[in-house]
Image 1 (spheres, rainbow, N blue to C red):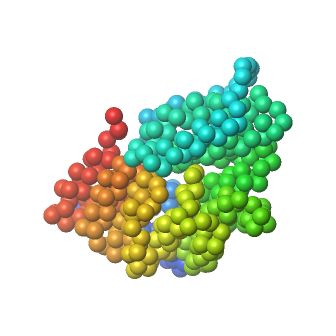
Image 2: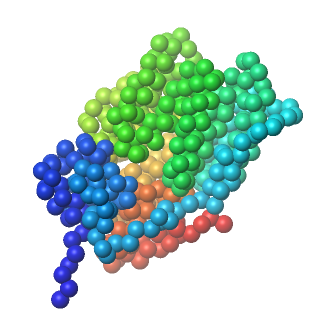
Image 3: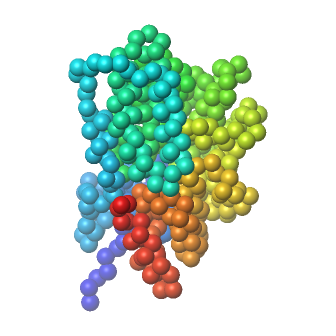
Length: 403
């Protein structure tokens, strides 16, 4: 009889106990939530390569095989990649050494950026459509920033920062990490050169998401506080864009805290709610950010899920009509968050139903979401026989490249 190897979660628990760490202490050190540690240990959540890399230094692990075991093969190519990533990469790394001709006007660039963000939020296949738009958009904004002078150059630089932000949104789930960092750095550099507080705050918002994703949540919160310091003094006398940006900064901070198990997330979330309710017109929807009353409610669900409170997530979701979410991409992600909440409770039929709704809303959101792929993988292997075939069929549908 062959001895049964411990699961990755059991290995994490054993090493944690040997190190004399509580789940809360390990979570704080690794930049994860205590609930995430709990569910990894009891098998309710897979140990991802990213989580393993965050945990390893604090568990005394120098070889990830000590966490995954000899029976687990790790592939560096396991992350799905969109076919347009190569074209976007070329646009990001094409340096215009010599440049001539008439640049597009800042007004034209703003219209083009707004149109691209509208496509991102309304298309069911937003990554495919953004992949078509981005190379030309990056080229046009890069050229304008080089060829214009004075105020026109500063305006062009602010639009260039937005083009880099759209590239980051496109690359976030299926691009090389180095490319994501490149978009963050380039976007911040363009915003600082523009000397535009709104552009700088937006760049910090995007940087904070990536900092959080790599376990640097404290640094993300520090940067977000700096950004609020730029925006808050201007909200009273500025236009709605300033209030929209302030609310988005609070929402980003709330999610960052929630991802590390910090109940202070609700304070930031409530600050965002108050800004939206007091400073933005009824029915307002941010063109690029989609900041709105429904989006604030979406973040409440996300925070509850990341804090490991499925009851609160379901309570928050109960009054939120998904049709009111002003973004197809966000609506697809909302269904994934609801699936995560059901998954936390072990409700596999509900998890599959919600992932199916997410796929019907935005197939690419499910295909490229690490959380969705993790849930589908486990459902395909472990769900009751009555739904296992359905889960496997959904996994096959979303794994096939879009034609």
